[in-house]
Image (cartoon, rainbow, N blue to C red; front, side, top):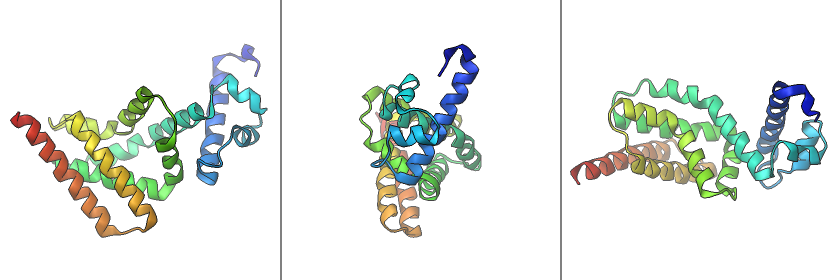
Length: 191
């Protein structure tokens, strides 16, 4: 792309590429995701994508993070109803798993399989759980180590529910995440 069109044109092209990448992930999944398919959908030559993203892994990571950003208000809206830390955890876990089920589990699977640097993985996890962090901080109950526990529960429950959806299992996973979070928080406070 001609760089003389300025940053606005470049940002627009990046947005178009990420939209094409998102559509590719949702329709084809991580295993069939290719720069070639994204290039075709964004009306660019395959090699032109390297002007914007150094690798398909980075393109996927940026696309997923961008998509998560658009859903943060959706999560925050649900968390506003929480009156206790336990409620906040339950709402976040349920909303996250239902979000994966309803819109993008195949793409979500990709982020877990990406060969990203550990710092990038940590950045993406922090970004994805920001609405919960804010809700818990507002309640004076934020603990980052215990948030990792919640993340693990969500991953495991989400994978199990992908095989066969079960409302009781989802409710149990939400309760387990909330109880575990509170136990870890209490243990930390006691020490």
